[in-house]
Image (cartoon, rainbow, N blue to C red; front, side, top):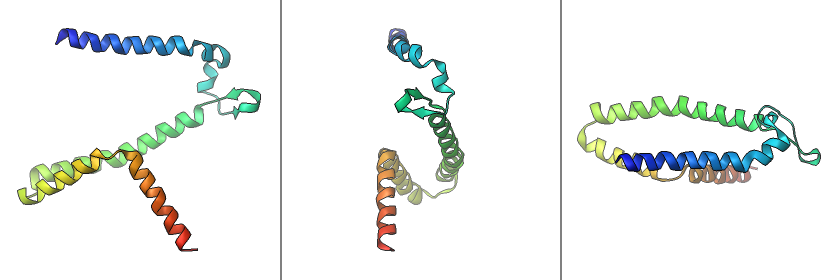
Length: 121
């Protein structure tokens, strides 16, 4: 077990080192201002990732604020309150929902929204 854990740490360390080595050229060309700049102008080779980083952090925070209380509430209900005949099918449905990648839900929602807006015009 110790060897397996050590192997995992070595693999992660190797990945970090490989990413650092491969990114040296981009870091030397764009610098660390890439992480703090908001400008994105490919014509002048100026790139800034701050809006993308900010959007990722904010959307993840919103997802956590919605998802954690909802999932904890459902889990507590299923374990402590729900009768067994109701808890089993709901648990199965939740596990089934978790097995579907979130991208599929996004595509499905996009298709539903497009069909709604095109049919109502």
